[in-house]
Image (tube, rainbow, N blue to C red; front, side, top):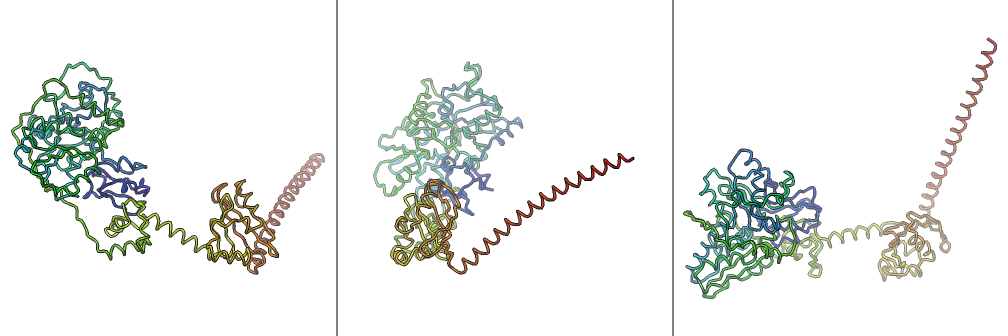
Length: 571
């Protein structure tokens, strides 16, 4: 089920605003029955949709209960803590964060940055052996998913190593035993997908938002813990340059520190849009030197991940991470296992090519018959009408997502109703300029206005002052905001019954005019007014009967009391 995925939609909450489609750069969302659902085969779990959904219909799966279950079974559970915790909990010491996590039941706390250091070392050695080519970091799981699914021709560019988290998890399993359980805590939603793909290495992944809620449930304030270092803090030791991974260029700093290669070009880019621009024609790179790309899905790096709850300056976050790098000797992992991996398990999405005739057929479904109808407004969430048409053909979207199409349908319906109504209908704005009028109204106003209607359909922007001498009724309705005002007025040798109603109070007012001289109108009006008089008469008779009945009852009570009094006197 969808709810078991790292990101899912609460369908009852979705308001079909299409903002998630608009913001999803990879369009990994489809609409079914007016509800936007995640296309998990396409999704890279960057978490953008969870951040921008205006009604919080996009949810992040919480693994807190799963972790609580591990702890209740007295399992040996170790936290792999992301180095960006310093931006989520500013001014919280290593001692305090470790103590607060242990208070939840975790056996030990270790820094994910240790795994980052090992990856940096392996990547550095790998690049040093290359003569030329492009190489992309495997550190960000969202980027790995993005390339493998959406840009599969670049899959072989990814350096063939586990991510820092999976490397760290593998190390902890090897050092502390296979019965050890590893739980990641950090800013990343995509790490939940990693735990699903590699359950033998990573048992669960919590976001910082998950952790904060858990602290609140347990009434734990990490800032209240003592800063005195009496026990172990991070096992097996404190990390070094690996703590820089959450910021742009952080990995490169570690790789370059370990490499001996001097002719490699290192670049870093963050944000899905920027990465997409980097990947355009990347395969045309023919230079003789090596180019290494550090790509991070979140703008500004992991410090701005979707699982964070602290939103403030990226510059300050970056500085806090840099200041985390201590001067003391960093712990270096000693590993005798391989961290190499392939990415064949992540399948590319199927790209469907649509014939031009099919695209045009889909466009006609939403009332677009020529190029000028393709306004590319983006209201549906797609970048163009043709992209939307492709989504229609793939059952990713629905015709009612097209705003211009639905507006046209609504306008056509209202226009058809106006044309068919025998009564005159006119709608005006606060300047008494006509917004819409039907043919019946123009005929009621005379032959000259009827001719004008043929030239200007709907009499749009015509001045009511010059058309209807009873315009003051409209002015009054606009100024007072009174709704459902009815009045009989004489116009030439005709009698009109006019009903005014407010559409937008003090801004727009509409009116329905009925020509009382028309036979069917006269008949309807006579019947209506006769019914009204009859109803009023009936109400009057009922009131009289009630009063007479009440009076008779009082008289009967009085006479009975007199009879009873005299009967008692005679006895």
